[in-house]
Amino acid sequence: MKKTFRRAALILLLAGFGVHAADPVPYPANFRSWTFIKSGNSAARGGVHHIFANEKAMEGYRTGRFPDGAMIAFDLISTKDLAGLPMDGPRALVDVMTKDGTKYAQTGGWGFEEFLGDSQTNRALDAAGQQACFACHTSQKDRDHVFSKWTSK
Image (tube, one colour):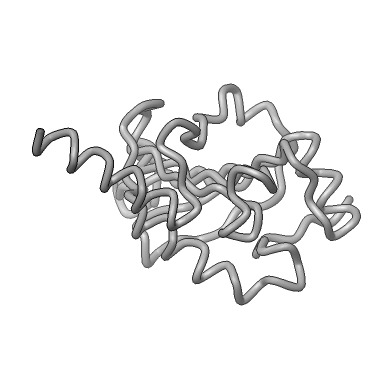
C-alpha cells in the first residue's frame, strides 16, 4: 500500500513539473549523422561539446520557432592529456532537448534529458533537474528556449 501511494505521489509530482514518466525524452539514435551546429570548449564541464540538430530542429534554427519533433543533442566529450596535447577521451554525456508542445507544455514545449557516457538508458535528470534545465533556458525565451545558433556556411 505504501509503495502504491509513493508511486502515485511521484507520478503527480512529475506531472506537476511537466514531466511525464510514461513519455520520457528518447535517446537520439544516430544523432551524429544529423546537421552539425557547432563545437565549443566546455572546460567547466570537463571537455569539448558538439551540438547536432535533426531536420525538424533545422527548421527551427532557420525560422526561430522549433516545431514538434525537433531534437537537439549536446554531445560532451571528455578530454585527456597526451604528452601535453589535449585529446578526445570518452563521452561524458549527451544532453537532449526534444520539442513536443503537448507533452512538455509546462516547460516551454521542450523535454530535457541527460544520458551518461555512452548509455542510451542511464538517465541523469530527475524532475527537479529537468525543471532546472528549463529555468536556465528561459533566458532564451525569445529564441524558443534554444541557446545555440546555426549559421549556414
